[in-house]
Structure formats: structure tokens, C-alpha cells
Amino acid sequence: MSSSSMRSFEYLESLPGTVFNRLYKQPSTALAIFRRMLPQLAKSFVMAMLYMVRPLPVTDLETWVRPGSRREQDTAIDLLERLQILKRTAEPKKPRAFVLTNPFAASLRQALTGGGNHKSFGVPSNTQFEDQVTIPQLDDFARRQWECVLGYMVGSTVIRLNDEGANLSPAVKHLLQYGGLILVGGRKVDITRDGFAFVLQEVNAQVWTILVLYLEKAEELGMDRVDVLSFLFMLGSLELGQGYSKANLTETQLQMLIDLGDFGIIYQNDPDSDSYYPTRLATTLTSDAGALRSASAGFDSALHSSNDDKGFVVIETNYRIYAYTSSPLQLAILSLFARLITRYPNMISGKLTRESVRRAINMGITGDQIIDFLYTHAHAQMRKNATILPPTVVDQIRLWQIEGERMKSTPGFLFKDFLSAAEYEGPCQYAKDIGVLEWKNDAKRMFFVTRHEGIAAYLKSQKEKRREGG
Image (cartoon, rainbow, N blue to C red; front, top):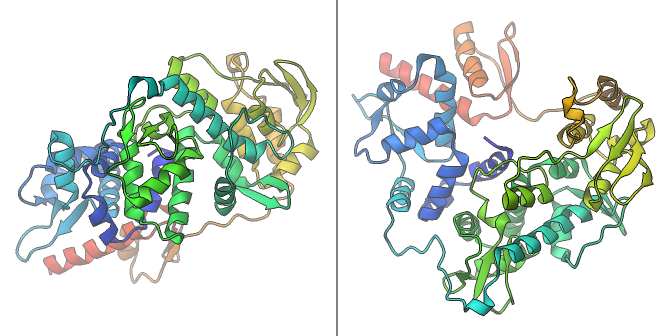
């Protein structure tokens, strides 16, 4: 699962069943979750069961999966259950079975076959030709707005960025602060560790991070989260360059048009107009189109479908850096952890120093994040080497970080007090199989996991098996 999918999945998983029931009544939502958040094996299970009238016995489902793929099977089932797409049935004197939940199954069938008057995929507007907005105009608007957001986070720390006419509303700045992506002290803005991790993400993951923060804030403002979520999933199914009518939108969704416009996700000729346009940031919300590393790279890739290497950083074993770029945003990111020395029209030179790296680490940026940035944006000439980054530079960055490191904490759940080794080994192995096991101690029969829902479901199923066998 991609990082953007994971972020939205974690939010969805926290929702109560009543919200899922309302959410899945929209065919666009069911289709978006099916397309974006499910691995291939989970999709295969859903499609195979979509038109079944009776529950599918567990033993029959297991025959669909190769014997060596038990881990993938358990992970897929666990994911479907956590999203309340699949549920177990346990009727007396009948084998355990699975069934797709409704209204998810009904909505997905409707989305795949068409029909109905639900209007959950948007209503195209009858915009006059002279009032239509072109795709290049939408891309330019989205690029300026999104890079203005990133520029505010990193550019105001050292370098003042030219916002090229883009505007950041106070609500956007407050949302970035609310999400812990920046720290604001008076007029000074500093990027945090989470903020730097955000900047390094693919653009689609960045958008979903912002949208999840918006969802959390919307609840505090009394906005209906089902309306908010339904509208976001609908945006991912709209056509780039097509205008859509506002007539069927709720009050919550009309307010969202204004808020999302601040991020470049929605474009409106005028707030009082009868139509709106989704930008490329919106139409790729529920697609798997490329892991784009930056807003500029994302738009360039989408517009030109170029496979050329976009790397611009050259780093030498003496810690000198040469960045062949004129992008104020990229230079601002470099200035967070490097000392910039000389600037030319299309290149800047600098150096990694203990002081510059330690300054970044004190701001919350990790050594691995710095290495990841340098690796991702390494120049094509660097990629011809056996090791893309000089090992001496990589090791030294980590050593500078270790100077101030002592302990790392991981939130999670401890399982202990098992009565026998057999009782302990089953759930411990299952936790490992689904990828949530963080630590274990076989001698003391205890293990630590990052999530407990899947383990709880496993223990419950094992208890039911014992009851059936006894």
C-alpha cells in the first residue's frame, strides 16, 4: 500500500460503523476505496464474491490462494475487515464463512455497471465555450498554489520565495500548524521533522496528508464528515478540464470548494459562479498514477510523460554540494541542512557541515531524511557510480545524528500472560505475518505490536474454532 493510501486508510479505520454505512451508500466512494486502498489479492476476493448470494466458506476461500501465500491472504482479509468491507458469519452447525457487507457490495455493483440517479460521480455543467478553463490553466493554478504551500513551509526559514501571485490564506497556515508540520513563533516559521518528511513525500501523499488534517479540523467545526469524505472520493473520479455543477452539493461541500481552492485542488472562476473545476491534484486522488516526488516533478511528469532523470544534486567526498537548479523551493530545502556558498543563474554550490546538519537535526529532521533527499534528487552523473552517494558522506551524516540520539519510542500494545507456549506462538506468528510485530520475547511469552485489532480478531477466531471442535 502506498504512503498516501496508508494515511487515508488509517483515518478511515478510526471511523465508527455507522459512518461506514452512510459512506458506502455512495457508488463513487465504494469504487474509490476499491481502486485506491485495496491490494490486488483483496480486490480479487471482492470481485469473486461480489455477485455471490450465499456466504463463502473459509475453506473455499483458502483454496484460491497458493499454500505459500498465507501471509498475503491474512493481510488481505484483515484489511477488508478493518475497512468493514468483509465480515465473518458464524451460524450454528454451519462452517465459518465470509460475506461482503452492504451497502458496499450494492454500491460497487452499481458503480461498475452504471445506472441510478445517485449523481455521486458529479454533474457536468453546461459552461459556455468562452468561459471554459483549459487544462494548462488548471495545471498552472494548481502548481502555483501547491508550491506556495511548500514554499511557506521551507522557504520562510532561510530563503524568501517568490509566490508568483499565489496566496496563502490564514486558514491554510493554521492547518499546517495544527498538523505539526510547522512551528510558528511570532513571525518566524520553522519546519518540523514531520514537515520535512511531508516535503519528501510524493505529491499525492502530500495532498492526502493535508486532506486528513482537513477532515480532523472539519469535525471540530461541526462539518459532516460523511459529506466531506464523499466529496473527496468523488473528486478522484472527475475528469480533468471538465466543469461541474454546484447545484447538487450540500452546504458543507460548497464550503469545501473555497477551502480546497486555497490548496490548488479546486479552481473556480468566481466564488459565486455555478460551476467548479477539479485540478490534477484532485483527479489523481484515487488513482495509482506514479509516485511523484515533488509538485513540479509531478506536473512535469503528468504533462510530458517524460522518463528523463530529474536529479539535480551532485555531492563530492569532501562534502561539497552542487545543485543544478533554479527552483527556489528546492534551494530552500537544501538550505535546511547545507551551508549554501555561491549562487549562479542555474546552479548553487554549498557544503554539508557538522553545524548545518546538526541544525537540521535540532529542528527535527533526521539523518535518514537528508540522505533520502540527496539520493532521490541525485544527478544523472551520480547514478552512473556503483554507489550513488559517497559512503563517507552517508556515514558521516548518520554519525552527526548519533551524537544527539539516545532513545527511540514506538507506540503500540503489549500482549503477555499466555498460559502455554502453543497459546503464545499462534498470535505472535500471526502478528509477524500481517506486519505489525515490533518486538517479542519467547522466553517470557510476550510480544509488542503496533496495531491490536487484527490480533484481537485472530484470538477471537481461534476461540471459536476451539468451541466448534470441543
